[in-house]
Image (cartoon, rainbow, N blue to C red):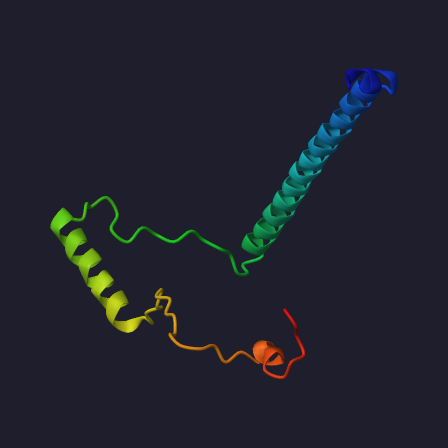
Length: 119
């Protein structure tokens, strides 16, 4: 079996194929990183031009609590309230599977009634 692979240069072909694939992946990664840098520079220019002209500028939101720590019992109460609200007001999906008993009334099985299918 290995004689056929060695005779037809199968090992060399496999190695060259692997190299092509990985070089392609590295090339794609480089292209993606270049696009990210290009778009980052473009967005920085837009921010600078909008802030300098007195136009609309995007600011990071301020932290609501600051450096205060929320007590653990209040966090537990909020968590329970949110869970109860979710259970009461959101749609419950049924994960149950039911099977009907009795004969099947599938249209695909009507051929047996009229003698069209012989088993």
